[in-house]
Each structure stands twice: as structure tokens, then as C-alpha cells.
Length: 387
Image (cartoon, rainbow, N blue to C red):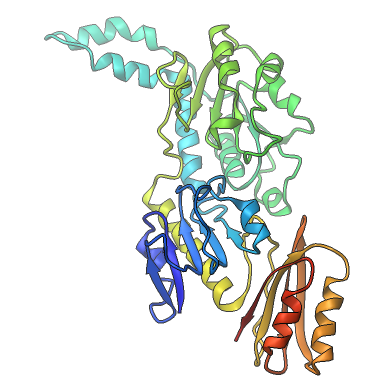
């Protein structure tokens, strides 16, 4: 029976995919967990159990997980790309209107009114909250993944001209992107042409703070910035100065901090991007299914540190090997089976940057001697027998 540790409240519709006959669900952080399911809980200060084989994040971002540390131990980290995409898309569309129409300021002002002539006060004061329409304006979408594509397509349907930029655009995303979306070759095209810019890229060392004073200098005066990906993508000091200088007219961010709350021109949303019942359910189901397929069959889908890799189960069992992506590993694995007189009926190997993963189906019982020899090889991170 597999032990599954939940570090956040996970929707039951997801956990029900982990059969009670095969899995024991616990929230005891000291347990010898085979797998972990979490949402926003930070694992960086957590001691990883020696038994841990996989971590499934019910969401897209994995900044709260020590991915490098997991990789060193052959622990597969999953996420759920696309499961919360519609929820985030809808909030980004709301942010387009919030940034344009001074809706929040107007509501706050209206709630301060007193007396018997509220209607008269409203008519007298509403001009202070006049805004602009989004129809006919240009939206620049930086990052055309699951969320960015949905935002681009929806904004175009609302009557906006949309320019998208993504140097790593996948074939799948390209198929889903409307033919009406203009593709930018350089991000400067986004900066120079856009009345609104929405950011949908992961947080990496390269993207940390990339929306900064240099980027603002290339943008149109009065641009509105929407950030529903990660707060650190935008340099807070630089955008506050850009707002005070009139370069940026509004910044809507889903990741409030001490720099961005209660600042004129900044609308700080309390991290509501994926906070819908549907999104939480979708993420929980996908995370549980990914974890179950890995623990039961050794298959990998949607891992951030190891490649997608799957193979139908054989009759006698299989070996799942997480290893470094270096030459001659496959030859060394197959030589071990050959020396033991065991035929390999099927196998697959895939790589992702510095890591690789192999599944080997055998025609006979896989012995402890085979496992010990493979485990002792340089470059092997973890080995598991699946029957």
C-alpha cells in the first residue's frame, strides 16, 4: 500500500482517484510517504522522507517545491498544466476591465457616501472615475502557454488587437492559437505596440524582474500591466516609479506584498487566479491521476524535472530507472539483464535536459541482484521494480 501525504487541503474528487485498497492518505508530515500532493505549501524547509518517490503539485507553478533537491534523489515532480487555465483566464479578463474603468476606486468611493441624496452625489462625483474601453486597443500577451493562448483568443473575441510573444511556443499551443493573433518575433514589438500587456511566463533566473525600467522605457506611455503569473516577474520599485512618472497608468497584480498594496495605480488582487471550485477540482484530479499512474505503473506525464515517458506493462514486471542524461546508460542497463539471462521484452528511454528516465519490461522475474547492480551505477538516481 502506498502512503500519500497531503500538505494542503486537496479536493475529494481528486483523492477518490487514489483507491482505498492501494493508498493510505495522511496529513502526518512525519510519515514515510511514497507520494506527496500539495498546492501552495512550501517544501523548501521540509525534510524529504527517504521513501518519497514523487511530488504532485495541484497547480502549474512549482516554486514552492525544491525541484533540484528532488531531482538529485530521483524524485519525480509533477504539476497540472492547463487544469486551472480557464480560471486564470477569466480573472485576467476581469483585470482588463478593472485596469481600464477605475471600478475598484469607484466602489470604494461610493461606499463612503452618506445622507439622503446619494444618487445626486453619485452623478456629481462619477466623472472622477471615467475610464476607457478595451475594444480596439492592443493587448500584448507575453507567454503563449495554456493560459496565454486562452487570454489571447478571448481578448481578440472582445474586439482587441492581440499580439503574442513566445520564443518557445509549442506545436499544441500553436494549433490552439487563433489565426487572428499576430506573432511577435521580438518582445520589443510587444512593448512598442501594446496598450495593455499581460504576462504568462514561469519564474526563472532569466525572467526574474524582466519587466523593469528598461522594459518600461520601450513601452507606450499610459500602458497597463497585468501580472497573474508570479509577482517577482515585475520589478516593484521600477513599476512604482513608472506609475508615478505617468509611464504606466495601472498595474494589476495577483501577488500582493508590502510594496504593492495601498499604492495609487496598483490593484492588488489576493492571489485569486486559480481560486475557483472548478479549478481546484481539476487540479486535484489531474495531480492524483499523474501520481497514481507513476506509483502503480512507473509512467510519467507532466513532470517538471523528468521527461514524459510511458509504456504498457509487461507480464513479468518492469524496472523504472531515473538517471542522469549521459552516454551509454542504456547499454549498461541492458548488459545487466543480458548477463543475468533475462530477456527484455520492451523498453523506452526519454530525456529532459540533464535528467533521463527508462522503463524496461522483462520476460522473467527481476531479481534483487539486477536492481543492486543498476542502483550502484554512476549516474543512476533511483531504481524501482513494478510488478
